[in-house]
Image (cartoon, rainbow, N blue to C red):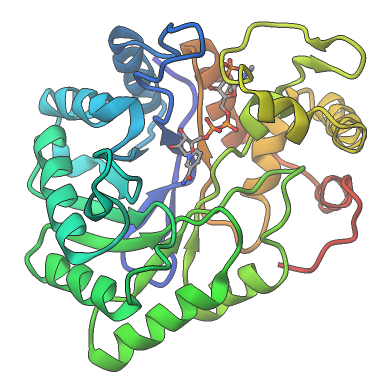
Length: 333
Ligand SMILES: NC(=O)c1ccc[n+]([C@@H]2O[C@H](COP(=O)([O-])OP(=O)(O)OC[C@H]3O[C@@H](n4cnc5c(N)ncnc54)[C@H](OP(=O)(O)O)[C@@H]3O)[C@@H](O)[C@H]2O)c1
């Protein structure tokens, strides 16, 4: 039995409550460069059990994760539990059939087909949250919002989200303005990348989120494992990792500037007797404007370490030092 008790937070301006730490399943069924699975089926169930045991109730997936296996395994797992107790978010966007441009993006045909396929894999009647995985610049925003609104009215989706790589807040603000003018469902939540060393959403994007009453649920809150203390400035990786087996990881994360920020993280971690991963998550939990980070883990041990972040108290001074660790001061959230 876990000692951790993950609590609930309000989900933007909606009436929904989200777990303060959401669980991400990107790596369920994901093949590494060597053809191994980062997380296989049995491990996936163990991780979901561990998250639920710690009080976690919000599961993040996408239709393309593990070629559909992430949704399938979550569906199997939920089949043994009370579906109503869990909030499940999925996503759509990426092309799924070679040579077929209609199988990509947020056109009406693709959205309708993809939502049905997700519901079938998850073996459920509704998605609590559907995210657009990326912004589709080819489909008119009205077409996308009208289609999504119809799905909300049909009860197949409860809340809408936008997950974008680069901050492009104006697109979301424009889509919400159209939706509100037409009496359609607007976006409720954003899912951007955000962590101690990836800070591009600070400023205009978070200001837009606050203005629109949007929940903000960051992905890669541990910088894909960089912020866990297992990378060394000189030696590189010192522990085990599957997540870092991509070429871009090294370029994005293993930089002098990031290791300088990690030094501050290590110092605070020592002061509060916690691990760097726990403090990196606790920093987000203390940050105004951030609703709930989506944490990932490859092993149950990692997950148990990470969820204990909800019990860590940081002083205002510690939060400020962490905030300014990478080139600060940054804009107020
Ligand atoms: N919307 C989007 O476009 C988008 C993009 C990316 C992710 N996401 C969502 O966000 C979730 C989280 O993303 P992420 O996996 O990048 O998150 P993350 O929490 O930054 O990184 C998770 C990885 O870090 C390592 N790790 C985690 N805890 C650790 C610990 N205590 N000690 C040592 N290593 C640890 C593990 O990889 P190794 O052990 O292999 O190093 C783990 O798989 C995803 O599952 C997905 O749901 C969304």
